[in-house]
Image (cartoon, rainbow over all chains, first blue to last red):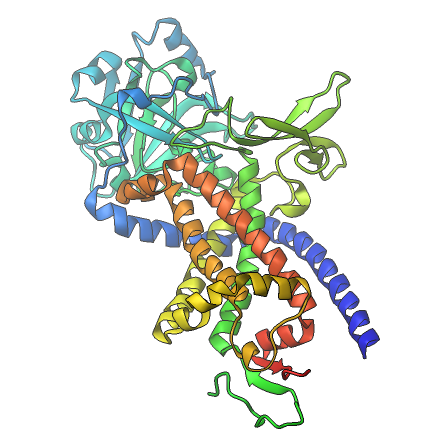
Length: 260
Length: 281
């Protein structure tokens, strides 16, 4: 009786170890299968719906901090410079002749210089930047609320997303899908803290942080906050852009809704 | 449905009793929880590996975290894994800080591939696993806790009485001798079980809330979460510490399941039926 129990117990442990090993291999296979990934993706829709139900209606503000909280070293991540020829040329002139293009589903396409952007209403916010990798930094950002720019261009009724086309290529690809871009919906586009920042910590945004213009979407993770913004396009879909998931990192498996 | 009732009347013959110990709801939520916890732990370590260090407060220090798993280049080109805790460093090559990748090369890596999902470095996929099973764990836990309150079992099953608390030293000695309660004493959890299970019922909500505090979206709606945990990086650390505590619990739990009658215990969590040895001499 006792021997029996021991043998079976040993078999049980062996069985457990084997099934654990199989389980890990199985998880890797599931991680590479399109259908299982799409099941896992359903959680993203649920998270977005629930968070939007909580956040969307009330335009809740991301926490803002004091000057004393500003991080001494704000980690630059992703691209720390941009190599688009137009950008490189504009940078050599210190962006004096650089213009932000606003087009797509708008009544009045715009081209705005930095000086013109600085004349629009501005907002300054000291906020926490949360990277998807897990780290956080606090910085002070000054810029024009995206809503002000969109209101001047006039969104057409079928506009659903705002797409940010950037000057940096984060991955060299043959089909050009390595160019950075991002997209947000109109809830975030019209949020008071969603700004096109031209100043960081009281000085023009440094190149490693996205000069001359960097998007801030304070209720989402860092990868949504496109640097080196060259063109803002209003669209009714983003499936035909890049690899179809709405952004550079989204095309590489990250969630489009980066609120968590 | 019988609950903790004897199917056979106790006889002087000291025949073992079979009692109905765990309801179907408890059994089902237990196994869903076990699966979710394993997958969340492994995908969580994948996520941790994207920034394998912990800080306190709102922001990251980068140069002086209180806990880190880093890799250092040796003079002769080899990579050394280093675990640092509160300024004290330990070489942990092969397991923490640096371990073998799928090609067999030692590479910088917080936790090794055999304990992460996926086994290779892939933060995006790790997050998809993590948030999917986080939802299942939370909803499953909600069902369990609601049942606990509706059936008023929290205080009855898990909160020890003052008398039980005084018996802790005795219970520890008995457990150390692998002597477990029998007879009527085994109809309910003993004081050590109560405290252990109660700590888990408390640890899971802390774990979930600390996890939500890392969400910039949640922080905009519930800024008090940041005050509760002392900042986003503290919340990340507490999330990690609470998960580590639950790992410790699971290890002790598995050992106790093995030494206190693995078949009886497993049967009770599968069929609900638990055999109670009568108090013999």
